[in-house]
Length: 134
Image (tube, rainbow, N blue to C red; front, side):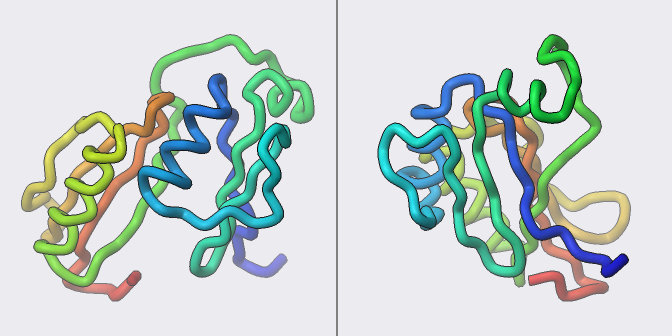
């Protein structure tokens, strides 16, 4: 199997709010989206991000839609400098994200912070001085 992720889909409890956050707040471009569609995909660099109704995504996967708390998953975005981490973090907060952990020097030698989108999905924004992931 090729080591690749083609699409990451988040189950959205409030799809219009999540679309507004990612499209209008963060400026992620949609792909073939018409208002009222149940699925929205955002074209990103290297992969795609999708939003789909939470209960329908759980049904599609054959699992219960119940549950709360940390899911064990965090999305990440790497930036080329600490200043860009701070800028991206501030942009996310201005778009409606909630600060979870402000950007700071971290134990592994980089600089990172975490925010949560309107439904609590975690995003790390990081600068890695060892590996360029930008």
